[in-house]
Image (cartoon, rainbow, N blue to C red; front, side, top):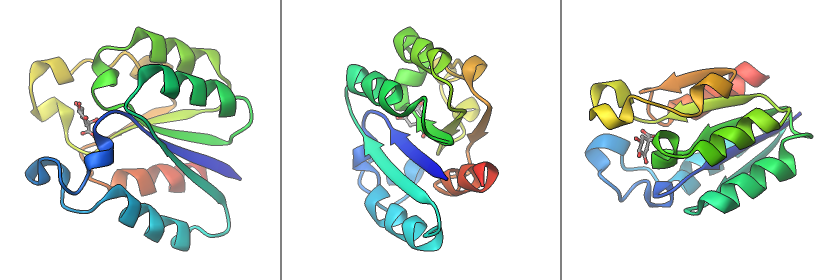
Length: 137
Ligand code: DQA
């Protein structure tokens, strides 16, 4: 089974960025633990701050992987191009947000991605990524 976690812009700063919203653990540390715990599957991590790189990665793995876990960061609320890429590929995508976007500013309430995703996990902190892995397994 092949699963990839794709994180979008500013999520490389997890652990340092607004810790009251996103926690104080870096994604690298969290991913290290996930890799150990789910060592019987192929689990990969990709992060980019660039819209086109996220689209390229979705095209690259989107006809081959069993599951994609996508936190598009702010591109969730702005990017028709990433939404089109999700619609174009075959692998199922779960949209994850660390914070509860519906309890925050109204511009975070709309996602261009959700309608093309298998499901959503919102507001469960970093645990949301693990819940998505468990769903795919
Ligand atoms: C986020 C929520 C987005 O609104 C925000 O732009 C992010 C992180 C989350 O994981 O809670 O960068 O996707």
